[in-house]
Image (cartoon, rainbow over all chains, first blue to last red; front, side, top):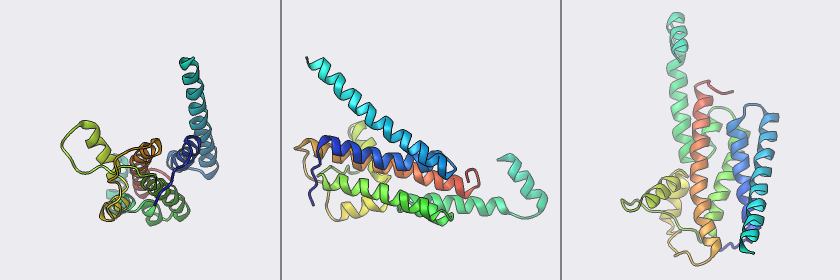
Length: 60
Length: 140
């Protein structure tokens, strides 16, 4: 059993799974769960892209 | 909480005891099998989604050659890692029984795999507590 995703694919997988759990556990209605899950997913991905650009700037 | 107890005693029944039992059963079952606590409190769709998410995260972590922490009394980070891994319940027990998670971390994705497994366990703690809250009527 060996799985070696790219760094960005790993981020997307992590964000998707964590967002599903956050959405279901932190909200009560279905609509609110979906909205919160999408919000968390967007924040995860945006934070990683932001951190990536920050590291690129620091490296220069 | 106190209000519920008063209502229960006035009506002469023991719904609090029942919901409390259901709540703790959902907590324990939800910890052992991700999402099973939600199935127990009659939220099967949520339970299925939680199982898919948490089990996939844990299995992918192991498949990425991530490390599974063992019981230890060493460094605090190792102890916390073990607690996180243990949150996955039977998934952790099965993975350890099949001798996964022993490879030394040699590539970046293996380190990610270690984090995937720990976070899957921590997310399962949250899911089990959510099932408990539904079981005792604190959440719908």
